[in-house]
Image (cartoon, rainbow, N blue to C red):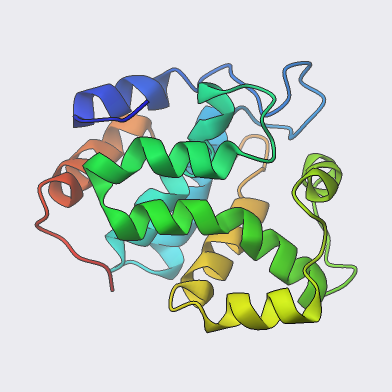
Length: 183
């Protein structure tokens, strides 16, 4: 699926309400809707001028909705879906949020992960080898991908008020129109 309009993307984001990263709800404690809002909100607070990074946080887990149960491929699926609408940088950040988890697992052994994230880490290749970590660190988007990953890990708090999805429509429209570039 390739998203071509902000309206299509908003419909998909709204469909995340009540959808979970694990079909049996054994995964993270918030649904994909709240997780998207929390991740984007945390990135807005830490990087207020980087709208593309914030939107990567908003859309990074759409692959769970597009292909439930595809934990290993969800980042690629989400990246492919948003690339035509939100551009290459947003898509690459979305794509890199899983390698960033593997990188952090290698660089910070014992770093806390949610139960679901710890479970899927193995399906996604486990902690990176030293050579993989060195290659990842050379990627021009590695630092931003790690920032996204850290917000992803933190954006799983039950009851955190991170606004409403409609708050993001103007940002989506501006990025989709190409009026805003990354930081």
